[in-house]
Image (cartoon, rainbow, N blue to C red):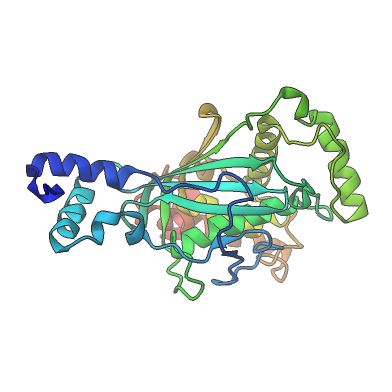
Length: 334
C-alpha cells in the first residue's frame, strides 16, 4: 500500500506544511469535558492574578504535530519543514470565557519554540450556553475587575515560561512578542440576547457593591463583543498610564511587547506602538500605594522611574523589539 514516504519529497513537504499549520481544535463551549486546572507557578504578585484561568493539564506540542511521532525520517522532515515556514514563530491562542467566571486558554498553534515570538494571535470567544454569573467582570474595590488581573496573569505566565502548562516549568522571563493581537469574536446569537451596554455597566456597578456575582436576568444576558472590547481597551490604557497599582503591573507591556493590536471579528479596532508609548511615557506622581514606590521617598521616585525606563530600553533592545530614543532615559542607562 502506498505511503506518505512514497510521494516525491516536494509534495511531502507541502503536505507536512499543511499538517504543521493545522490548528488544534479549541473547545466549542463548556460542555467539552477536558481536564483543566489553575496553575500557581511561576509565582506572580498581582491581585487575584491566578484565579479563574484554567489551563489544560496536558499540552504536548509534539503530539499536536503527529508527523513528529511516526518515524525518524518523517520527524526529521517535519522539523526541516518547520524551519522553512515564514509563520513558524506565529502562535495562536484561543481563550473561551466560560460562564463569565473562568478563562479557558488553549494554545491551538505553536509551530516552533522561541524566545522572540513574531506574533501571538489571541482570540476571545464568549461561551453563552451555560449560566452566566460574570464573576470575573465584577469591579474591584477601586480597581479593575478580576478579569483584568486574570488576563495579565495569563500574559505574565506566557512571557515567563512560554506556551507550556507544566506547573513546575522553570521561568526564564525573557520571552518577547513583536505583535500581540487580541481579537474578540461576536457570538452567533440573535441581537436580542445581547446585554445593552448601559445595562451591563449598571449591573457591574451593582455587583461590585454587593461583592458577589449574580446571574443576569433573561433574556438579555450575553456581553456583546463591542462591550467586551471596550473593557479590554479601557483597562489596557489604565495599565499603560502607569498610575496607582498600574505602576507595578504595566511595565511588562512596555518591556516585552512590540505592538498591541485590538480587533473585533478580525476587523481592526486600535493599536499601540509600544516603542512610541515608552518614549512618551512620563512619571505619574500618584504611586504611593504601589509596591514599586511605597518605601521610596517622594523626591526620589522620578529618578527610580527613569532608571526603570532605561532598563526597559535595554530589555527591548535585547529582545529585538523596536526602540525610539529618549535622551533622558538613555542618559540613565549610560
